[in-house]
Length: 110
Length: 114
Image (cartoon, rainbow over all chains, first blue to last red; front, side, top):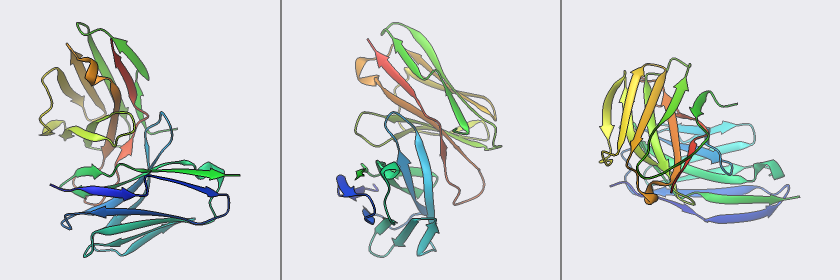
């Protein structure tokens, strides 16, 4: 069974610093790896999707990399802002089923 | 604003009540999902509908009964729930038949069982 792990569980940085969030998965037979953001009491917002054949995806200040052979993905958020404060979840997609990590709770202080 | 709409936003019910959660999307997506999320935990898949047919049931107890009346609507009927069923219930949708399409989530229904 796929296991997805996110480290660290929580992260606090001052505004302007770059954020590095890590995700690891045990089964490399995935369609893709997705990153989501969840604000308190809200649903999930899709940030980036990296197909299994890709090495990275970028959207604005966000960049996500994927290394299937080592079972790792990293989400980089450049020049963090207080509005980036949220929980970030990664999920592996196998046969249309998402398996989520427990998330990294991020606080960006002004 | 989310493109997947869930109602109600909050629901409090007793263990003997019958209620339904509703989910609606107008993005033309043909795959729809129900997830359960406990506090401080990641979402867990419950059901998947593909072209209005149930394709995945993750061994969910029968007190949860999903229904997909048409391609835009997804319901979750609740009956005789237990206190441990209190959670945030999330609906999602995605394009079916196309690999590597992201799932779009609603804001969820927060369910409390008394």
